[in-house]
Image (tube, rainbow over all chains, first blue to last red):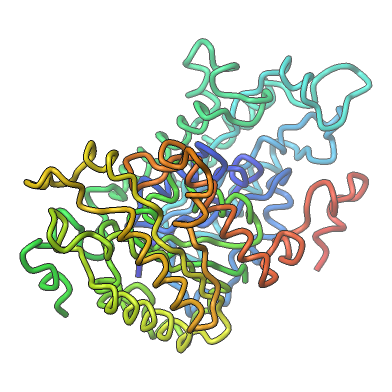
Length: 240
Length: 240
């Protein structure tokens, strides 16, 4: 059985198989080694994620199905919507966000004790770009998200990872290390460009590698053309 | 349970999650509707595919696992290697190719009677480009594949689909309807450019649509932000 990895999150996960998307890049990188299954739900915050958790990962699968080797949990961009702006209905207070994230991790760990859970913080926000691409225009003329709020949720996410003893990609901090992050990594001040997708891809690869989930360690499914199939006796590779 | 589709084939399937790849594009197109699982094996012909079939799709899964709604079977590019050139060890005579393809279809149909099997013919070959990108240079100075041979295997593939009463994408014919097919669709005279990937993606989408596997017909996993979640009472969408 080939190992599998779930990608659980909001629109940044749902869109991760678009051209140059971080999910497709992971699937390609681990081709013949790992199956990647997308469980991305556009607009979702941790409150809604918690409500649907048992539908996303049905409990009855415990019995018949094999545990995933890893799950990425990538929420916070919607929780961090400001409570008094146009996307207030997606907002989740930061203390509830922390509790929800803990509950999601706890539930996944209970279901799959050996599975590596990797939290990913929300990305930074380019407020000017958000104003050019609003879902709903705010009467105040201000953006529905701020980078400061996203940063507070990112910090909370890192804290929860520490409390739970699991891995975390601090995307908010990582992206802002590059001076031109707003243009290089964000397409609409929130979602990712191909460059932004590449950062997520590289960070997740690194976290997976730290727990032994790397090209070097994971077996390749079936004999490889150049390495294991002898041109003089190809069928030998397929005996038993 | 979200429906799933397997992509079974050679390197053109194995690479289908690279940037702009047809597999990733399918996964993105059917996001929140269908899981796509890649079972591509670089260099494989139908003889080897038949040998590994029970490992790729383990029989014991019949009991516990849900049938895929479709499987693409995309072999022939390697079978069609010429028997007297540098990739002769991958060559499979055309009659055996037909038998092997039938056996693969029969085996999948036996396992999953309700599953839609879609055959895909090998793509056309640009012999000049192959000479610039050989795996192993042939002493004759000729390419290891010809478009004529690929065409014969494509025709055989279409015939088998007819005999088995299943769908087929005649990629060899489809691609050559465009005058600049060699540059537009092939990167090394055999593998696909982004344009070539787009053709495969569109053709597979069409075949899936013909059997009701379309965005219109397939349910979306969990309530959608704009359509089903009421900003004034978001949690209503998550009751029961």
